[in-house]
Amino acid sequence: MNDLDTPWEPPLAGTEAEQLIGALDRLRTTFRWKADDLDTAGLSARVGASELTLGGLLKHLAACEDVMFTVKLAGAPLGAPWDALGWDAGGDWSYTFDTTGLSPEQLYRLWDGAIERSHARLDAALAQGGLDQLVHLAWPDGRRASLRRLVCDLIEEYGRHTGHADLLREAVDGRVGEDPPPGWRPKSGRAYAT
Image (cartoon, rainbow, N blue to C red; front, side, top):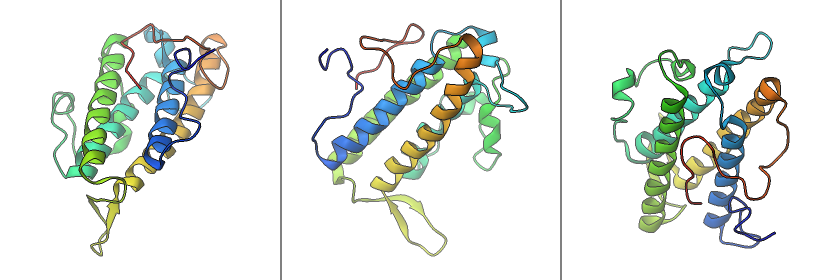
């Protein structure tokens, strides 16, 4: 096995930025593996009384990506594709779990697009000022968050929801495991470079 078999693995020894982005990309890949190659029924399956679905998590995490590296990073409005989906910046975040009217292909495309935008925006921000730079996100007392905080918050978000995806996917077809098998690539949507 080599790095080409598991491109989602963080470096064994890298800079802080490389380690954090590597951890985030590994979580993104593990989440996608859990949500990959499902039809509407699979993306809509629920466990117990929970309203969570894999399709809802695809949409929610796509929104988290764009909010993190658009609104919180730069203070810019979300824009496309969210404006066409009825995004309300002051609205309820639970909206992002609602997948009414979205096909599996649209959900995978939504998440894939958000990942591509996040990679580009995060790479540009790192080139401009590194993890220590202060971002647009501010507390009521005026203190501003660092780029490091945004990356760590997104790692936490993926950690939480990848755990949910573990349970949901196992209920759909029995898929279990901590990481994708070596050589895995998404069957639905498209793969992104890590």
